[in-house]
Image (cartoon, rainbow, N blue to C red; front, side):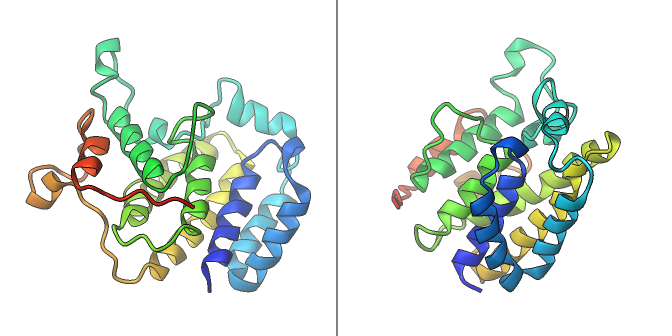
Length: 226
């Protein structure tokens, strides 16, 4: 399997998390053909989703994922408790999580701009696809995103989808299959760790407010541009 197949799988799933009225049908067909040949289990899971009631409904999409969504696609909302005070926002684990994601995106030249939050699931999938196309990740940043954030964020998101009976829960196994294959393709490249994590001074589950981006700069990580 080459990186094109993995990228196609990420993009196919990402497209399913777009409002059905805005999905690119031609691109879906193209990506699906690649995925059917390289990862048939992922293609089958996407087919299950597309055949289910609500998968093509804009009303289902908006009511579940957009307007005051019961199941927001922001993984941080499911992984971290919301701060109880305004002053707690800047020091919350989710804020540090967002800063770290932004640092990863910047390292690979992935310009998020102001269009979405870094922990928006389709953005994370888009990044994983794009970063496959800019060269090998010898630092282990992609592994860190997948192992520490993407995969751990899927179970709580799945509970939300199950609670509200959302058809979009059918896509989560496809993400897990793709991400697991991605990790296997990385070989023995270890997950990137901050200097403090390497020293054992910080738990992998604890992030400070401003460390992530600063730590990456401290390590002089080179920019990778497509």
